[in-house]
Image (cartoon, rainbow, N blue to C red; front, top):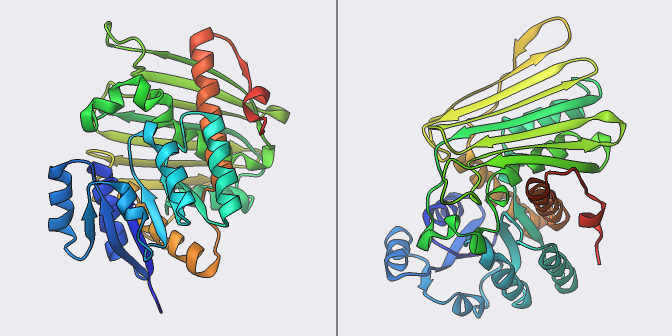
Length: 348
């Protein structure tokens, strides 16, 4: 069967993992890479000699033998480059955040629809054998009606990123859009039976007196109609990488946990416990979990979506929701008030 041919735009620390995942996924072929610097171009050529490497992404988009473009760039470039991908008639796999503004999210959704192309957003935790198992059990009624979710991360400080973009609000948007966006997505996914979120209240602070805008500690509460709510909390002022999701419902509870030396650890420790109201049991997982492994599943998902019309784990609407929740949380941090989500969710 003819492989789904991928082009990759961005070959930094995470982009190189995308390239690896594409290259080793059955049914996928990495045919082209666009990288920014001479060093990253050379690294891509060395690691993937079968792919053509460009220093201008527009040259990659001009190729007629690229089916899907995977965009792994600093956040402020997502909108511009993704529009160019869809205009070129390619399917799009776009790293989170979808964009830094809701208007840009809406433009991408509309353009993908107009061009008849698949648009997938990189909320790869939905594909995890761990975090996805929580969703599977909730959907099967294991905890009854879900009422409360806590998603918490304890980790080392962020890497600077190419050119220090991750520490520049003009390019990163906010740190809420950087990693808590994953946790807003998970919480909304887990509490889907409660309907759409209604409000967000958030607090944050910084351990850096000269950079109070860089929130090393962040917590938010997201409420739903009927009383269900979620708490998202993160610190970047710690060590290693430890993530937890705890969920309770009317008849039981789930506790998922993952730990590694860093977020891209190939040998993490992890587990899932389930309480049915009487007994606690360890739930077996079918494979190792972690971002580097979910990325492989994400590429396989994109192959199925393009070749067979299969569903994507997170589409443009999901990506827009996640951006809206982060922007609402940022406004709450700035104003100290509960933010009604209605104004962020109106599509044009």
